[in-house]
Image (cartoon, rainbow, N blue to C red; front, side):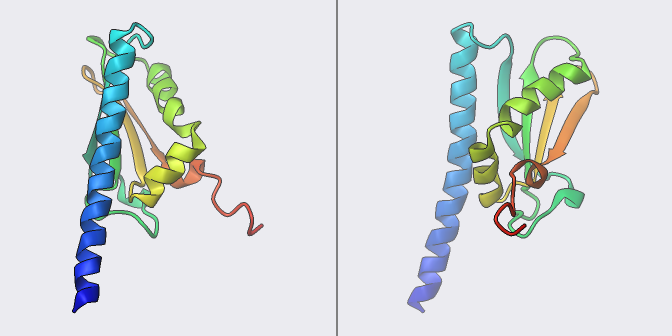
Length: 131
């Protein structure tokens, strides 16, 4: 019976860690925008993700990490890709996101219908020791 309590505790701890990462991302993005380091305010939230990007650790109906760029205008596809590269080029962050159950990175502007998405597992250099 006690092992069930540990499983529940671990589950809540993992959920809290996911929300903490989103909160920390939003806090850092806000600070960068206010300080003038970033030209666009970014905001992250958890979404369902893309089922074709699933991996062994994906969270059911919570595998998407969506970044919304509050730019006040429609962003070009290249600008959305540039925002996504900030996350994807950070292998440690990408691996942490995968370990916490995210499988999809999405970037959208607050205006327009453009968006970009990536399978996180393709950007984490997974299996390097196996080859």
